[in-house]
Image (cartoon, rainbow, N blue to C red):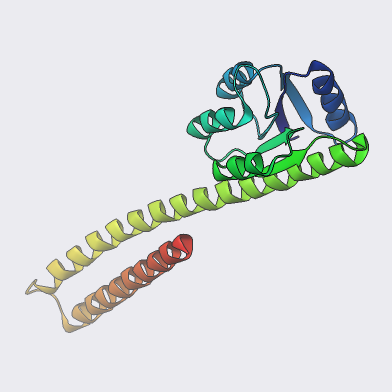
Length: 200
């Protein structure tokens, strides 16, 4: 189940949002009544996404967002607020907010949109994290294979210099060297292609 931290100084809205997202959207929602409380919980507990109000007394949503990005750079962050000023939206997105939703209107469509945004952003974040982990694992495997191939190549080159090596042995050693070099080139090409794809 997706675990969400919702931060807002309006306690009635905290309760209402928590109940809806839990019962109607099947999300595991924890709440914090201040930005500082939310930041402490986020640092010490695992969450998949953060929903935050903008206008809070101890720290506004943008300042909280900046702090969160230092601790958890990739966690989905949604600004959920009654402030609909364009400059607030732009500032939030510039500092790394993933979504902005204005409070107000009919509760059910509003909370449904909020829940859908959470699910979408968490799925995207998990896919990105998985891709990064896969790339790191592939680099590690490639490095290990290249090291082993280098040892094989060095051993084969030593064998070619032995006077006792028969023509048949020399032929097999040549095959080993040829295929070793071919594998190294393929791994190098694949690695470079992955880097280019990641950078683009």
